[in-house]
Image 1 (cartoon, rainbow, N blue to C red):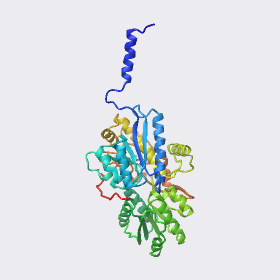
Image 2: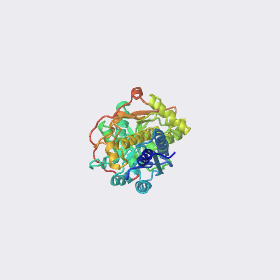
Image 3: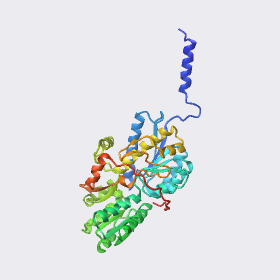
Length: 414
């Protein structure tokens, strides 16, 4: 039986409408993912990568975004600013990503973020905490750098508040590394301590890779320090904790969030007990959303604990926010994604929080200080330091409006 003219016309029409319109976007949506997957900062990068992959798998299983699958273009920047910049050039140029998630290190982000700004490709920073990351271009009409982690200003405020206001220490020692991260953290901590009328009895700086800090610790102990404040990363934090133990010194450690990293906890072991740090996410099943995330993450990666739970949670949420923005924009064009991020219409249920308009045109920081809690190492695990924070986490804390970011300048060395 020969097909009728009507049937042929219907088939032809169906064939025509199945072909993408001329110039329409098609194929997978490529998203860059860059962080250190090797070296001393690897707990951040590995945790981030695992969580972003998990979010992408969920998004693609539900049909992707705009009818297209998400494809990750993953690169190991090794926490090296120069390599990070080369990767940024590749992702923007050859790979033609719609946006990039990364990096984990302040110096790496600072070294390459001008490329994203010039190319009008959104860069979403889920881990690095340097304040200049979002403030450098905050006065520009179009600003393409966004962050979903607690910046160093917030963390320094919390460290100083915990040490002086909550625990009543007045004689403090400060140990920090000489990277952009450590130097900036030191500056913010000193500024916060001044507000309490406290001047450190000892301040010591050291390069990454240092093997022994006994002399600096002994200097602080002899100066009468009651507490050690830190601004560095996991391996060096273990050097501090183990050096303190060799001296038989019981002064507590309070510092920035790397005190929660696995490469601090696993190396310092019992010497890490009692260390306190700011956290946006504690790996405890306090509500159904967090329980689902933790169980799924651990199961997929055959782990008992997440190496860097904060990196994982923030990375997972960042991918969800980016997908929501692309969906709202109806496009993978950078300016349209940026505009959507600055005015997200849908609520995005993440694991750090449920995001409701996390960004504005003036403020590209998704995390405000009321959303951050203090964690504490107990029995080798990072748990809630204070019961009131644990209770609040059951419901979750939402972003609060704050002032427009200030312009800040900082070097890009790390």
